[in-house]
Length: 155
Length: 155
DNA sequence: TACCGGTAGTTGATACATCATCTATCCGGT
DNA sequence: ACCGGATAGATGATGTATCAACTACCGGTA
Image (cartoon, rainbow over all chains, first blue to last red; front, side):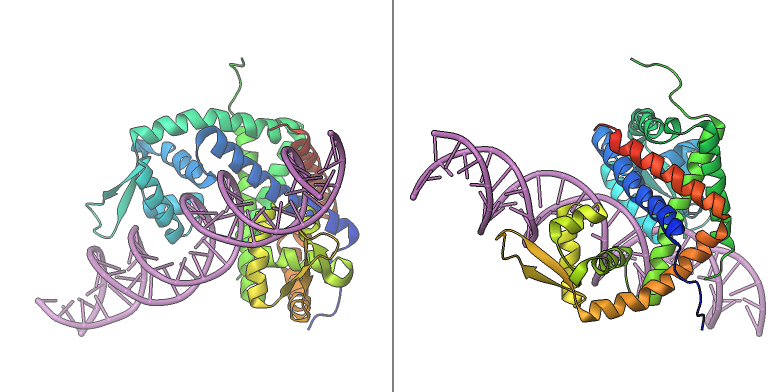
């Protein structure tokens, strides 16, 4: 079924390609900068930031996964790698025998506190300061709208 | 040098987070849909589309890499996997003994021709048709501007 | 108490991304 | 003709993402 207007117009395609291209390039760039400046992957950074946002730097796997929008399995693997490097630790949960906490270690705090300001500089240079405040706001708004759309979309 | 105003304002941070969050979610979603509907990864799709855009469906590794903005190594690995599945093939290059071509196979054409329309429907539903034409254009414009900024940025 | 469906997190397999290194070839200068 | 730097692409190692089992525990019910 469906016969009509599936493909994108030239204009639509141009916008769509620019958007996708930007994402790919920006992700690579941010990841590379983070790695070069601080020895962290984007995944590491995201976890550590989330842990500093939470009292005690300690949170249930489940809640952390929800907070950053990850699958449990992905988080479990990522945390396992980070534990090996000593930036986070795992703690059993007394109230729920199945559960566990992820806790940021002192070393983890050092790492993220050193990394974050450098990362912000990059983000400013590449994005935030590269746009007018209005355009940045517009970008944020459009992003939010698309996020809602995705959340309301079935499948 | 530089002591001040490194972090983002609340407003800036909100925009930035929405933006990043959108990208992460959208990429996952598009990848999952592609996989479910057509058995392709985003990487597969990108390669196959690029190959259909080129006369004979045949292009030098180097040129393909440049076209889609990939590292050579990444392309080499990806193509190797795709060769195993029979959607593309590798051909030696007569003019340059070091070089090689990637060619889309008939099977590859079938696959991409079946996959593309479905993918477009998803892209329309989640993005293109979820915005007004003006907003989509704005998004494309901002993306282009940021891409330029990244290209002009050292390091 | 014993069962049982649901939940929390783990694990293994496979695909993908990135980096460093390697091989073969090309091309320019002598 | 030869040498040496540069280029095309391949390869192996490591980290990351996703999916499908799997384990252990919870909580309610008979």
